[in-house]
Image (cartoon, rainbow, N blue to C red; front, side):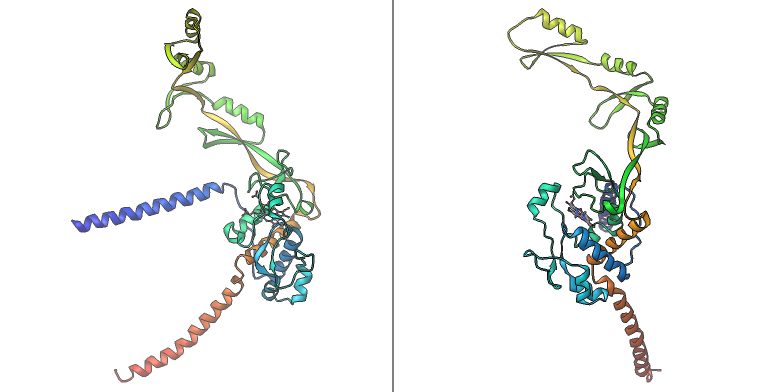
Length: 361
Ligand code: HEC
């Protein structure tokens, strides 16, 4: 019997743990509602890493540091000399002297000013390849779009209200959003999508009803549905009380505004009257339209073609993915050596076993 209870409580614990992890992972996914593009990077591609390093030094290091990395480590990992990497990642230190090839890759930007300029300090990008994933960085760098409501006139579909300006605008060109109008049922069920707002409105007219709901602690309960909004409002009105307050205290309650107003007129007193309508009913529309960005469209060409720009961003992403775990370049080599060792060791172990067991048989 005791055993059974134990088993059950262990099972309960396990299922609770599973539920929590399911909840956590769904929360994480819910957060990243946008579709990420596959970056298709290859950290073994050393020319791509070097192109990424060069672009990083040119376009990003003014704001972002890689405070755990040194240029000579990148040189060693990509198989170029210190002189060659200096020509690629040419930076200056605080005294405006060329920085040493073994120096940490800091950024010159003063943090306090940066917070004022961009609303947030540009973060160190040493680990972004792992905290955000390569696909995220790749999609992020391709998802800046024109948005006049933002300080720099740009927004980002992956990172809403982003503080970073689109530093590769020259290369990519300008993207503008193409909107889609989703007709949603009860907030979350997609019923239809339209490219034109007028058509979406037409569809809305056809399927929408006005629901009178009673607001409750555990959600709303539906009282009645009406095609006509006025009708629904009349139901709410019929269930509304008008409370008369005098100096913030309840003094009377009526079924209509007119009756409450009349009471106030008929009882003039020194002090303050107030009439407050109260109802636990309210009107909700069964359908509504969500305006969402369907995709981005290039409206002004940049210096690079879309394919060239993809490659630029892929190289940058590749570089950041490598920086976040430089040892990954060597990991597969270690693996091959380990397997070779095990293979050779097996031969010795086999003959040793034969020798030991010779006399037993
Ligand atoms: C003018 C300064 C500036 C430059 C140049 C710049 N960034 Fe940024 N970047 C920022 C700021 C500021 C943020 C923080 C945005 C925020 O929190 O709203 C940021 C955020 C990021 C993030 C997101 C980090 C995270 O996990 O939240 C990535 C990735 C990134 N930048 C990559 C780049 C790359 C790649 C380049 C070069 C092509 C670059 N940035 C150039 C200012 C800059």
